[in-house]
Length: 284
Length: 328
Image (cartoon, rainbow over all chains, first blue to last red; front, side, top):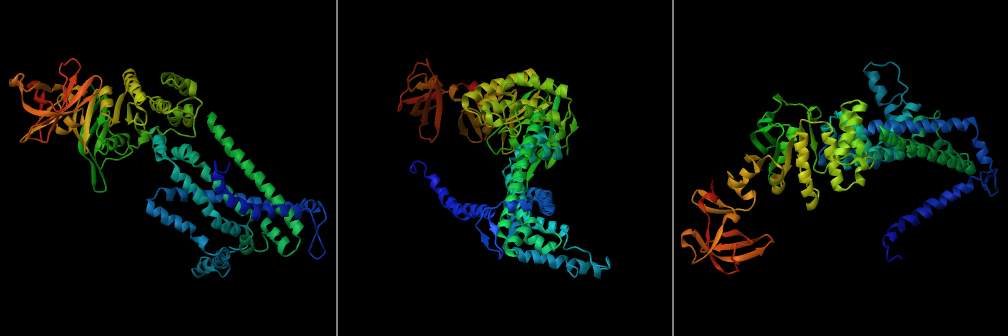
């Protein structure tokens, strides 16, 4: 059997790795979410659905809502910034493309926390932007650039846009340019050719990038922590709190599970929507 | 005959490399013109300049007497059939074919009417809902042609449209394309490196070499009276005899072989047979001339009587009328 299909063996290391380090912890989280928290933060191995009942509360509802709004907006902004950039890069000469892709990826080489604090230095009241604007006399009072949902969004998009750029770039690169010439030849203006040919043909890149960005921004807690201040707590922060400060691991687990299920639901809807748009185009 | 396209001393350079040196060409309305040449001869560049995908470095192209200058491809009243068809993979056959009409905002009833007509014409009615991936090479080729002709273009540009198909299919599609062109009355500009294809389909052939048009004439003229050495050797098989500054070209089927003692008055040179290849309807006989490196090829058809063997000594002759004098 294995001799006939030796390729199966190639998947084994990854499967073992994921099995040990992903599936098992995942099961543990599911189990945790049905256990109780002891008085001193220890886990009491008794079944309860209480953790989930607690979540049904307008307070958490609001945080879930905020989290998804931020994640969706981050995804949309990443597409709006990422697609044109990918398009530009894919139209460059090979050697220049590599330089640009390197530039896109360079932030990954610098510690995430350091990068977030760099933004604090730029945006805070006595930060780079405010100091410059004040010394130029453009503003008299420092602008509130930090610790609001705008700054969180800025940080999120800044952090996640490479995850959008790379898959879109790949799909643009794979696209046969002659299809575009064919569209021009058949009377499509550059804009129409983009809309009817390039965009549909690179949709897989946009979908991949969107899922990467969306999922990453849902669980993000460093950016809202550092750049959002106390006001804008997202689900990532609440869960982090349950595990590290409140020491309520069962409740934190329940929140994680609900967050994960809701994300999966949204991604499913997203897939359905992109499929539907395909069909709609089919009947036109 | 009315001129439809005129290329006026157009030139194309990429960076410093001259791909097409200044060249003029007039194409008549309704004709089937083939640009024939080896790869890299500039024929595709020429076609792409006519389509508007490349801009001439200098000179201009006229369609119906109007200069095309910087007119983008989507405003030129011509359509192209691409080498690998360039069908849209995310659209089915119908949507691919309708793309041009949709872009031009032709009304729905008219779209439907023309779609049915064209689908009938290229026999794709049954396959209308399939995507390009679900079609064979020949079917994809039909879609590409349908997608172009539904727009009723003044000129149809074809860039090696049969290049990706196997020999048998190519043969039958050559005739179909020729008939299509006759029935529609559209001007065809056809690019190929396959001389047989060019011969079978064209009204006129422009033989290109290194960006230049070596000769432009009917297939028969190109074959029978080539004007340059390149044309003489590129089209069909030929024997070239060099004498000082002139070359004499004689087609292998015009070469007569004699026994050394037979009709000595008609002998032009002598040699020894090095090879004889049987090809069914003819025998290709190769003769190395005495005291020279040159090998002459002669076609012997069944019924010519003599059954030549390798190592036979023969004399070669041909009649004055069958030779073509060329500068070399």
